[in-house]
Length: 419
Image 1 (cartoon, rainbow, N blue to C red):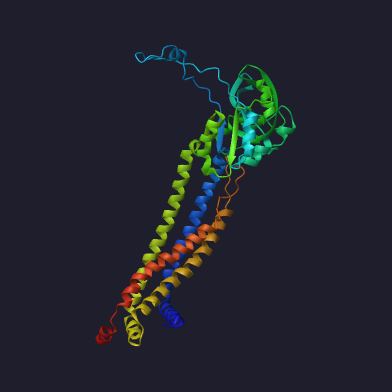
Image 2: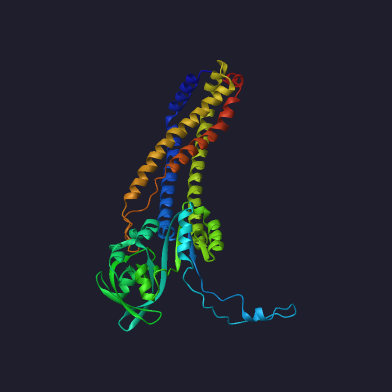
């Protein structure tokens, strides 16, 4: 049968009941609009939360954890099959916190094609002196260039300049919550005491705000050289080595490999943030489920409208069959009607979804915890629009398939005889 003729008949049937056609198209449009908007907003929110946590977390963390030695002298002295030792209150050994053979490890990392980059770090527990009060805190010794390149450190600096930590000796960047506790401004000099009781003055050159309030009340950052000086350690002293891979999914396997190769403790990002990743997956799953449910509901609307159209157009279907149209031709006509509703309704939904997402993207979102975020987060991933268009066609196709099969089986003789 002539394809052009089938499209012409489908167009005539659509326009003959244009109000019902419009209602069906609006249902598809609304479903696609909400699907695109909801998915764009939820994934944008996930990206924002990922930026707060995952972007600041290394894919692999190499460190030495202080823990009791499992090989106690008593076990080595009495090793018989008739005796079992019960040892309690075991104290941690004199194991060093710094990473052994730091230079050799970095050489291996440089040659590993799986590694995107690495950044050394020193974690030092200190007391910030506020008059007669000591506030517990942590000073992180970092390489500013590496931290900014791999973990976006400079994006979380809300005041001052991150590079001043490297340029100015004995300088520090305070978490905003910690700075508020100490009531200090940029340019002020603060006093801190190390775990060994030594006191040092440091100049405040910036504020850091991660979006996690409790985190910002204890954390501060200084150059590696400054922290080594605070602790009285040599220039090769490093307690942590943060590694970022080209493929984050390879982190668990590479972590186990590095732990054996370098004889250190190692932790991958999946283990460190398992609960957070579960929340991200659940939010995304809910977004897809709600969007697909909207499309299915719209499909039922199209199904009902096509069913009504078949009952109202019995005479037309009978005439078509009597004039030589086969059942499969009638089926094609009604499938073309359903796909036309899905196509035009879907295209309108994509446009409205993009427009609504753009409007949400411009709505001010101001919070003290996230000073760098100015508007609500939206993710304009083209994949969402592709998924929406494909689902609109699939849903409307199946919504039109069953009425089309029913129309193709109508016996024209019975209809004409009844008239």
